[in-house]
Length: 229
Image 1 (cartoon, rainbow, N blue to C red):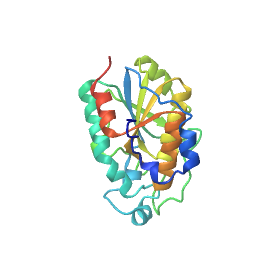
Image 2 (image 1 turned 135 degrees about the vertical axis):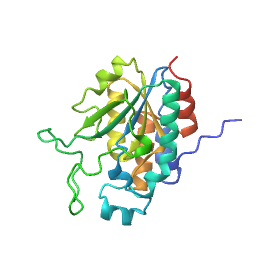
Image 3 (image 1 turned 60 degrees about the vertical axis):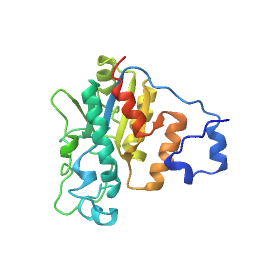
Image 4 (image 1 turned 30 degrees about the horizontal axis):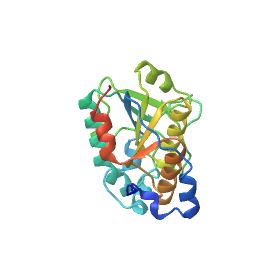
């Protein structure tokens, strides 16, 4: 009897052609020396409290509404597991310092009275600890214009476990560049999020085919819990 295919969030938006194309790709296996990368887990995207998107973006134009709060317990679990297993943890945030080329990842209409740096502080449950690397980036990919690839090589990392936001933006760009730099990439389905559910699903489907293994949170926890072998 053939095994039952694993279910994913994109199953309800792809058609027969996409399912056929998917059969032409081989599954990927992670390496043995993972690191956890949390992409842009700052207050701009969560806001100060759970709110539907239509309400949240009035105060925080970059907010992902309730999607971020739904992902938060999974992000916390990944971070706790990585730390307890001695797996390297890295965090990204925006770099809006004066004179930095790029001047911000994307351009949105700011909320009244707020500057570009407002809300770039990490939310408390995911705040970096001493010794954890913080990558400041001015474009979508955490690799563009940063030393991330060098730092990962120095940490002897072969697999990057990616979580955070947004799935179709910074997560996607970072995943593609990680693949291009020769790393195995694992994207955690329940721990990435987007302000558009459709963009979230399509981005994960495409990443899973071409650049990464999109896995459920329990499998990612097992991978991190095994530590470095």
